[in-house]
Image 1: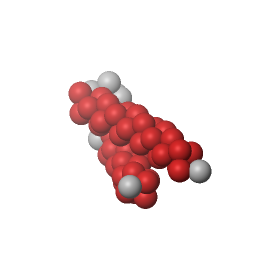
Image 2: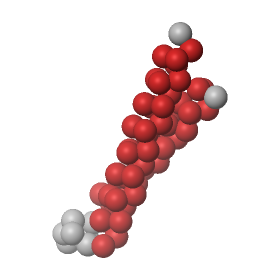
Image 3: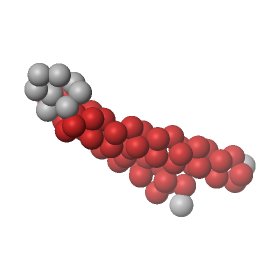
Length: 65
């Protein structure tokens, strides 16, 4: 189960980077347009989930030792 959590964390971090890249590419005149903000919000949620998954992974790993 620990390995699947780590794989999920890697996938979500790649998705977060992709959403940041798409958000940067979607800016037109200013960064404060709704599309860019939506991409930034989704990327922030992805990175928050990565932190939660990594903390769970290390907690399980520490418990097994």
